[in-house]
Amino acid sequence: MYDYVIIGSGLFGSVFAHQATKRGKKCLVVEKRDHIGGNCATIAQEGVTIHRYGAHIFHTSNETVWSYVTSLCDLTPFINSPVALWHHELYNLPFNMNTFHQLWGVITPAEAQAKLDSQRIPWENPTNLEEQALALAGRDIYEKLIKSYTEKQWGRPCTELPPFIIRRVPLRMRYDNNYFNDPHQGIPSEGYSALIERMLTGSDVVLGEDYNLDRKRWDSKGKKVLYTGMLDALFDYQLGKLEYRSEKFITKRLMEENHQGVAVINYTSMDQPYTRSIEHKHFLGESSPVTYVSYEYPADYQETGEPYYPVADQANLELYRKYRALAETRKDFLFGGRLAGYAYMDMDKTIASALTLVNVEFGD
Image (cartoon, rainbow, N blue to C red):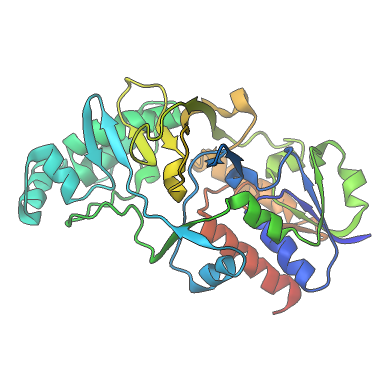
């Protein structure tokens, strides 16, 4: 008999397993995939650490989370400075003075601000994402750097997307290509899978098993269940299905030392069907005569069976709240993570949320 049966070996479940094991609890981790680590899993190929499910760059302002992660692994400093390709024009991200100079030839923040103000359309109550973006960033930034990328990502026109998806557009009035503002930024030097493996030391792990196909069997093995999967799946979709967007990843091995010169390129026109390309060796500064580049193709969840981004509009959030109410009737269950929470969560927020549950569960 285990103290906890943990469904999912992503960050949330693995942090909880690590902390529970440190407190003398016996944990069984049941993972649907054939590897640990969830979407942050990595794999090494010919001296290159590959992020299996897109770029995962750890960044945080939370000192507790930073101390926790660095107690388990070394992190190689990495500043994310992606670029955006619109047709044959290249722009720095995030939107900063470099971007504004590339767009308009302006040099000073005052010139950039005047150009932005002249382009903004003052919608009083934006009704869709396009109106919201035009009100925040103006037409040039919207047309070249937001519109097509967003429509590819969500699979529908910006005029049919709710405005809350783009609540704000960070516009930096300084020459600064550092994508994140957090003081702590880096990537585990041995890859994320090595970090997860350390978290799961002392736990029993079963791979390739879908908990929802045989719940009674797995429930019988523990006193409590920590569920990090999709809530609608747990309840056999009895209230309807929550909507997700997904991604397909195509990774190419290239006989080059350096293919694109940067870790991340965003493709903001419709010229390319993918939204991003990731050259993995740039994350850790690895040296290899070959390189691996992954291309991210947005897809319907039904195409891949892998949920990535919740379509958190009003209808889906209302449906999620109903499932959450059902979940709260399961007194021997705990819930956490991005799927159970139907929310996109950065890695540091996921870790912080798991540590909070640990404190509540064990009375720390």
